[in-house]
Length: 254
Image (cartoon, rainbow, N blue to C red; front, top):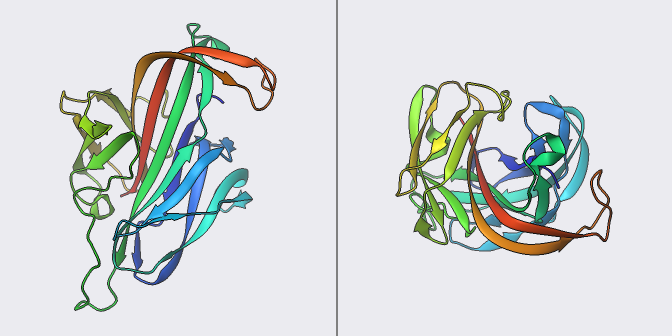
């Protein structure tokens, strides 16, 4: 329960029939010491035909390039050609900006994350089961939909996106951050507010992993019972919030 973010990682292009690994992280990509295994309500793979396959996530404690850190992972079989979505739904948590010197006000966070994976045909003459191109909707309440396949994006290209809430365009806050930047303080992070129809553009100024984030806040009060102890509360405490922040992340490789 913090202001850390949830994000998913997976190779974005494979051959149909390949095995691949899916990863779930919680924290800040630019700081490996801040990364933890997220609490997950649901992890699943959407196939090109629209079938939803639950994934059993296991905990890891070491990754090359990161070192000692906690994360979740699962093996996936990408059997059919077409576009897959690896999707994560995080267990809701609470956060208060006053915990780190900001304005007081406890809010609930609901977080979602996905990666789009394209499985190419081994046989060019084979027929795809069902292309997902142009939709890439995971079924989350809040969705980021790219205008064109993000796995084909190139450095220095501008990519357009649209944000939807419950299937309808929504005006939301967004940011796009390269993995090595501090997404909260680096001036190179691209951030702003979408147009009324939920659209916005990102200039992918370098190759590598980008995290595209969209969020909005709604006035809705409620309570959450803490499942574990924290610096500012203990397990079993009833935590009252007055607003809900809904966040969704799309990870792309450029």
